[in-house]
Length: 118
Ligand SMILES: [Zn+2]
Image 1 (tube, helix red, strand yellow):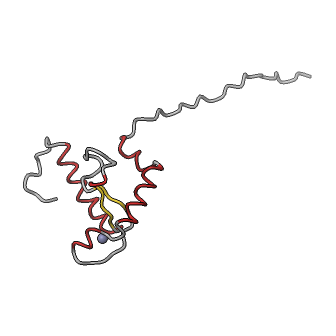
Image 2 (cartoon, protein in one colour; image 1 turned 45 degrees about the horizontal axis):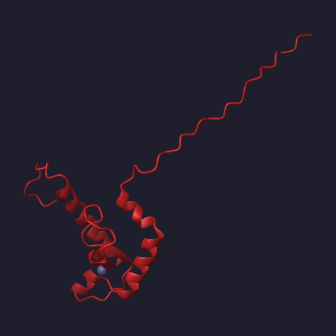
Image 3 (cartoon, protein in one colour; image 1 turned 60 degrees about the vertical axis):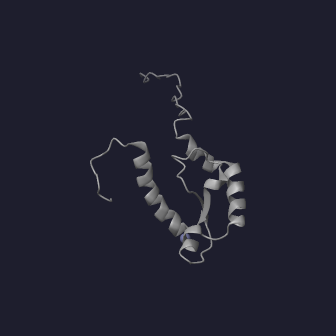
């Protein structure tokens, strides 16, 4: 009686490529630092009200610390004169405005939408 031949195959572990760090934009990484957690918390304690609401005469507790000049285009992430406390709603609204600002700052090559307030 013939036995099926046993095939022995050397075990080859799959090669897992470790994605190199450092491809991400540097500025975003600052948000994940202990330094930011600590400093932004302290900043909010010092400025407990939403700045944008306050300017409109509304008192709203701040929930986040925002960069007045967006992180993507500001000179120094840690410059607290560029920080302001915002509530979540104002932060979202500002985020949308910032996107346009960043696009403007980055590529003045896009001149297709001249005059249109998109
Ligand atoms: Zn607000």
